[in-house]
Length: 502
Image (tube, rainbow, N blue to C red):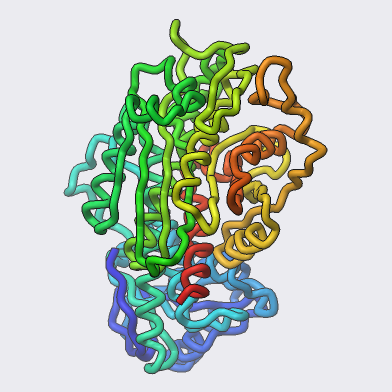
């Protein structure tokens, strides 16, 4: 899809369709009022008949509206004007895009960015519009048999979207917002694509290849450590997870160094289990196919790097991705085995299905060498977090309240919310082991908290936060697929840090 910014008159707009809004009180937006005036009250008459109530996400397509140059006018419901916030704005944008998905309107101009949204600048509104539009039109068909190019359905939907702004002096700011929105959408799309790929394609080697290719495209350094290097580093915990798989492990390090040389980097760590059977502690067969999404932490780090590289963000950021499979075979780690982590701490493995923390702990120890300003790990870590928070908020744990507040604010600003969970010392004894320094599970109660407590044992030398995205990284059921979260949250967090630094 091609985007552009313009400043024009809606009634004179030459396009296949123009998009305007209607509030629930049947109050017309400025652009809708202009069309109504040009058409001698045509829209008002439609509303009086009851064909459009203005409820949020409702749509009505009008053809050949008198006094206008556009072939179609799409009315989009905005809900109650007093309640029209950022969230409602995004919903209205998505509804407008989906309403045109099967239409013949290819060249479209939207006037929704002119709407007044509390505390949102034109730049931000345009960025959100680009993000929401590309999210609404996302399709994953990379491994499906290609459709016949002559198929009419393939030609339907928006091909070019012009975003109209109210004032000519807003065009430059809108262009900036558009670039930011497209960059974020590209990162989200990459994270979705990687998650949606089947595990026989998206292997640790594949993830490493994508990182290397992206580094060449955007000019940041990428290093991939192989098994022999991991053995020399003493990553016994990470290697204990991978030893039951035929796929070789990969430890991916990406360095986006666009800040001052003196600036300590932010380190993002993404869990990259490309398929999780549970190992010897085998998972039930039902819905095990969704365990291809156990690498969504890694996918979100890769997606975030694509976004910040596209933005040329002025910040030093390191990405670390430990990647492997968790498979059962004769060499696999057994319950009762004791592993020695890179930090030197020994770990009693009571459940091989609690493997994400075993690969992350070595990555978190490795992160120390970068002397980070902060470390944020992202992982589909526990089903317990889904029980606690459902699918709306990611779980947030941290050893530093200020860092936690930064991430919470970034989540609110990006509509990619997280919830601050407790990690009190009271929970730590649940990880006690009779045979090692620490056990890898602490029982059923507070499972997401004890998992975070486990990781905290390896993060005492820096400010650290953990995002448990088990409930937010993908959707199940009819809409099964990756969500791309928390790329928006991470991007907002890094942009805010860059703004403070510069």
